[in-house]
Image 1: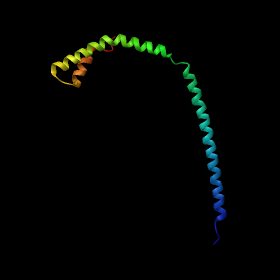
Image 2: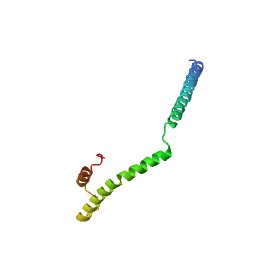
Image 3: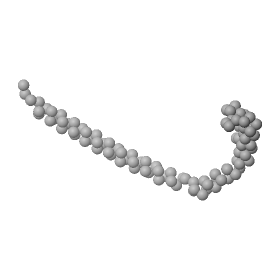
Length: 105
């Protein structure tokens, strides 16, 4: 019986070489992928709205929806005071929202 040291070192060398090639391919693909992602991010930056404009839009929307919100709140608070409950039942919520015509503005 002969020792198998010669064939095991060949296999070990082969596995190390395959692992190194795989690691090199993985590293290259990660490098390329990170460059593609960074390139896409820089293009998105130019299409964003300015912060002041976003705040102005949100403020105007809040001002326009306040009367509707106030009416819905008054209905709900009145119902809660009449019934003595702390939370609105789901059916009452649906009825109030249906009467409010939220999306018919």
